Length: 394
Ligand code: NI
Image (tube, rainbow, N blue to C red):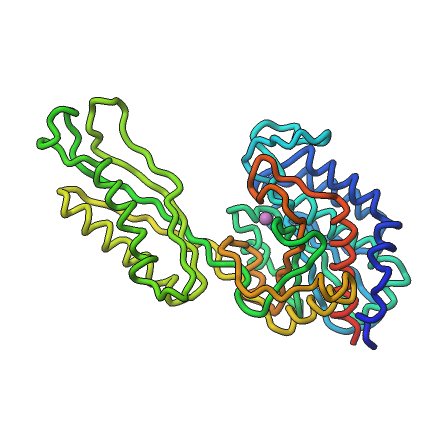
């Protein structure tokens, strides 16, 4: 049976049946953003929205995560659909009537949208007419702590990937035309690692630099030298990013500080390069520092691995999106994003695909002005629904 052919009209059906509810849910979640693993209230809202559906519900997964399982009509494979639930430590400046009620916290990465789209898919697939078409099980995975906490890793450690055959996730994507789905086989998001560096010099009087080793000048040289790793040591056709996002030193205008510190992120796609860069960063930083009578210590953390799509799963998502939205709105993207994503931990264990869903030219992810047209919610819910129908059509 080719499910993809019967998908015309699904967006209208989802919008008509659940559009209002999932928009209200999205606004409720948006108003009360929660960070990291502390998504207790968000989880409660999700549970309330799932109440009454024929789901087997597991709570407290990775602290405040939820796994809700729908048994379809047949005994075929199990697929999982995953949404992230956490917000960011950003002060909202959208002016929306349902803006964040908490200073310094905001849903600036669209995870409120992802969560309500997944609820929409759960509601749709739970209807007898859809459930009867599922030859297997669907697990709806609501994950905390995508933004730096590695909630996906914890969910995998707690066994969420066990017994699952394929997994899919969506992310709202600024800059991609509205209502367009895009993905690719292989790497779709970069490995995202982080580092801190401490530069140790010798402090002194601002007027007597010859009696000190100025940690600020050393830090400035190191910051510049680190950029040559990408420009001079990485194959020019290989993507890599070294960004220093924080730098700090000093206490007064006329004192040469003893120490300086910086923090940054490294993004790579190639695994060998990912493993090689920390050693080269350390050698370079120490070399520069020692040449200037100082020292540098690197503290490097491997965080999120590359998010790598399974070719068949990516093809399935694109095929479904083309049937649902039209060929021109299902795009095979040429390049991965250098952003990081902890869905990578699921894709290390399972075949699956991570799909971008376009929200057009809006303010970027992680900005205080980030917002999107809520018409995308029924479209995303329909896409997740259609992926499940296609994956379990056998
Ligand atoms: Ni995100």
